[in-house]
Amino acid sequence: MAKSQSAALDRKKLMADPVMVGTILVLIAFLTLFILYPLAILLVDSFYGGNGFTLSTFQRIMAMPTFTKAIGNTLKVGFLVGILSTVVGLLFAYVEVYVKMGRAVGGLFKVVSMLPVVSPPFVLSLSMIMLFGKAGIITYFLLGMEDNSVYGFWGIVIVQSLTFFPVCYMMLKGLLKNIDPSLEEAARDMGASRSKVFTTVTLPLLLPGLGNAFLVTFIESIADFANPMIIGGSYDTLATTIYLQITGAYDKEGAAAMAVVLLCITLGMFIVQKYYLEAKTAATLTGKASRGRMLIADRSVTVPLTILCSLATIFVIMMYACVPIGALFPTWGYKFTPLTFKWFGQVFTRYHGLQAFRDSFVLSLIAAPITALLSMIISYLVVKRKFRSKGFIEAVSMLAMAVPGTVLGVGYIRGFSGGVFHTGFLQGLYGSAAILVIVFVVRSLPTGTRSGISALRQIDKSIEESAYDMGADSFKVFMTVTLPLIKDSFLSGLVTAFVRSITAISAIILLVTPSVYLITVQINEFAEKGAYSIACAFATILILITYGSVLLMNLFIKYFGTSRKLKPEKVKKAKTKRINIQVIKEG
Image (cartoon, one colour):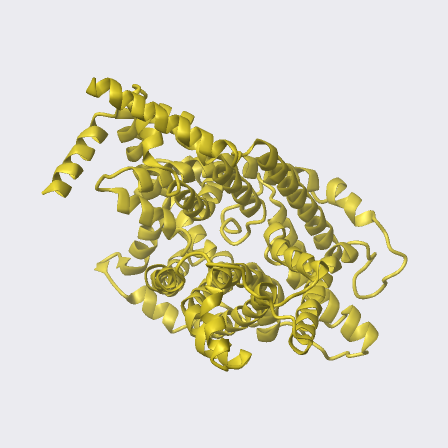
């Protein structure tokens, strides 16, 4: 009874606030139009023909040997990459959390975790070809291997594992830090060896987190377009097959059906990861460790593990370092001396580099604040407000995380090329720069929303209630009270959205037109043509711009973010106001 009365009161307050109602309606319209609608159109294209409901499109694509083979290839790559990335990520996380090591090794770990964030997702494919390809520095010039080929299954697996294992490392590092050391020390006190403690105590506590890391990596792997496109050779995956079905066969209906198959796989994995494994992880790892962990100092353990991880780290750094070095070669594979800077000049004088960097930077700069603000608004509604469509907003905003970029691109083509429901409404979006900004926003929205939800749950509701009691409306409260308190999460979401937008490729490869030049598309085109030197020049400049932007934004966050010293004072001041108001009311 009390709950129903409280819910009714919340709804009454909500309906009395036109700003809040308008915001919710706009959000629902945005999420429906740019996330649900393109996916719904894919389903309609796949199941609806001239005579109504039909499975003929699925029957046609399933009869294609290339498509059925691509499904098997995608699943094999996804499972192996998921396993390898999780194992390597666990090794790195365990060494950092449990093993006593020097600052230099810890610094290398931080570099490795940062590099995939600020670089395009296919940079390692370029490095792999230049180092281990038919004309590779190591395989051909140092080892004299003429028949070597890095293209195909193993090339994709190695590149994706190196690209995605830092994601697992960052996830598992946080989980390991949250395990109470007293549990493991109790087992040690009872005579168990370190290996026994790991297998019987640490690993069981970590299993949900391992499953979570595996599924996240699996989804990233099967949704990846650029790496299989560059280093896959004739080894087709679902993402590349969908792309070629549109650009090569001009079969939009077939591509839509293929996209639905890929979407079903990723959605299934996402549901397991989101609603099963995340819940089990939260229930298993209960909060912060009660005291500090005694690090392993035994040299028989520390030396081998540190050397192993350091070698792997140095190898990854070498792969990334190969990109700027590759941009200095005059002609790749034939002549390596003298080194030249001509490709960096030609990026701007011959290959539309200035326009590509300008367009990419401007579009990402437009998308980043929109994404950050939308993320904070959605987070605020989910955490601080009660209304019936709250679950819809949260679920749909998170749905973009499970939708592969190629699938979203096909959905936008089918959904907006003739206007919404082929009525001509919003047809002008298709082929414009605006649709690229929308894609950037949609792709980065889940990350910012999760960060905002975590931050808002730490804010005492009495702070906002004080502002409401003083006559402020919801917009005023959000802008002057809530947003300043979650300023760090907002700025962090801003940085993440900018980086994800400027390095995106799979979602926009099908939507970009000759009127707009994007850096990642240029890199992909030159890499496909075998012009690795110019591709490396583009990639090097992009990494420098992205890394520099991240440093500047982080510096801004450091000096203009929310001060921890001010937080308690603000909280105390707001609570004092709240008490004074209550006293006045009661008096």
